[in-house]
Amino acid sequence: MAIVVVGGSGRGVGKTALVCGLIAALPEFDWAAVKVASHSHGRNEPVWEETTPGNATDTARYLAAGARRALLATAPLKDSPPEPDFSLLLHDLRAMLGWDANILFESNRILDYLQPGLCLMVRAGAEFAVEAKPSFSVAAHHAHAMVERAKTDRLLRGDPASKPVFQLANLELVSPEMQAWLLLKLASAPRP
Image (cartoon, rainbow, N blue to C red):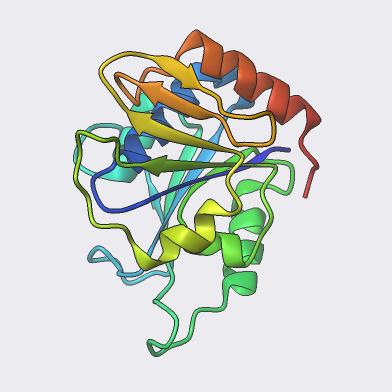
């Protein structure tokens, strides 16, 4: 089982697009994709399952990209009543999806409660001015790689100790270089 978290520096940087790109690039993982949101999106249940692929919602986009299942999990922000119980939420998700399911989470906050096998952070590229979420600086420390939108696909590497930065022209189309890196990382990732 693989647990992957995709977070990001702000709204609109491409987190959902990257989740869709990962689902499409790695279909052999038969992903279940979970968006963790701080508001209910009009749903009464704390966990809601999307059943219709399309473009209307992020979870519908997950299904359209090839996810086996797509869920929206509502967890209020810290210090907002009621205080989120992520351990219970994670237990409920694992029970719904199966204890051996490969799961992609779209969330920064989930990193406070679980250690994924792989963590990717989407940040705004130089051409895209986006105000950073407060949770990004903390979440970025967990990242195995950064991803940003750019004019062309390329891999930026600094010194061997630094995290790779994958620049993608389209976040929904993972580059072959990034796909090879992902497969290598997922093969050696610790299992939760």
